[in-house]
Length: 260
Image 1 (cartoon, rainbow, N blue to C red):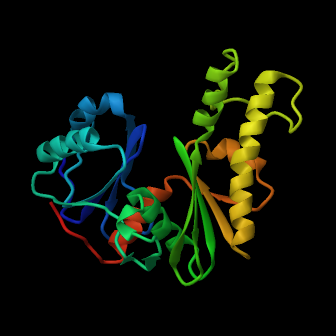
Image 2 (cartoon, rainbow, N blue to C red):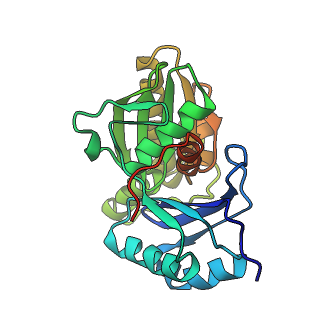
């Protein structure tokens, strides 16, 4: 196994259902990874073996975690084995970083994933107002102004949560599968009507945000983005792993928070 050079960074996005990771050279352009991967929370006991097989020995680690203490502990255990000498930072929302001013009433209460996503879109679309729709377990729809101020956003159940609630509470109607073919707006069966309604709700929130932030670009990300993006009536750019891109942009900006 060949160890990585001292100029490599490990980026970690621990979301509500999966942990995603990517290894980047310190001088690599935004979003260019040496190697990347993802695993469900239930498989985190295999993380050490996966990282060792991939030769993950970074000099620096930046991790965003919204999944709680158990997931953080599993990641920390893997880092102690695979990257014992690395400088590790647990990314958090702060008043300002990497060109983004955090406009939350209490900046520390903003989810670290949403703050990272804002940094990511600022790097991708500088100098324009942008709406970020991150469509995962929850759907977050956030706004960044042209001068780089995160002004706030919306949080709603993700597509699976929304459709699953209907499935559980309407005589066990079928739950929506992520690979379902998109139905027409006015569906002629109950299964498709559930999906059509949930898609309309998700798309409507995003469109409302774009309309409220006049002239805004729209970036959509997350596991449900391929289903939701075609339902939008506004132009949107699909970007994979916007949180990971934001973490990378934060490191490229040359700023670092407290390490642990």
